[in-house]
Image (cartoon, rainbow, N blue to C red; front, side, top):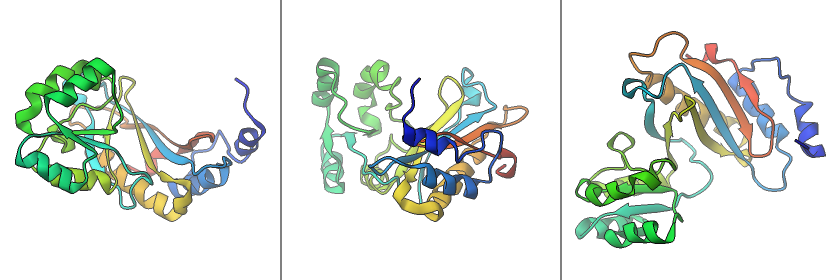
Length: 230
């Protein structure tokens, strides 16, 4: 795969054989960001779990201290007063069966997070096959199935993110923008890693943090010494 000169220059700054301390890795991530836009800094953590087993799922949500640098679009399935609360809190889309139909018939996904009141899960359940693979299915564990829709919307708008292992047992999450600088990125990183470590399943055996890597949108991966995190 051909890589541009900026990427190749960035790669030269990273020692691929080294496991960096998290603070050093984030400082390096900022230095390797060469794009003309404000790149997102991402965390990729491969965990020592088997996501095929229900008792080894790692999933949760956290409000990052400094947010993610972008405002998520929130869709809320609610009716009556709860729909009004969601709109007042700043939800981008609020509805019932109308939104379900729009997603099913128009392949519409102009949103980042889905919130639902418990009484609407019968409707939302019909979308499991399309929302599930995209990581958009609401869940009580992530705080996205709740009667307190206003709180859920406010937290998401403030920078709440959901973390979960994929089928390869890897958690992928944004932790901010390059423009945040290394200190704010470090605080977001520490908050997220702390949550992931606390979420370790009791049934997980052996090494939990198999690999931890940070990268920018267009930059190379930078390996972090996971043994210093757990």
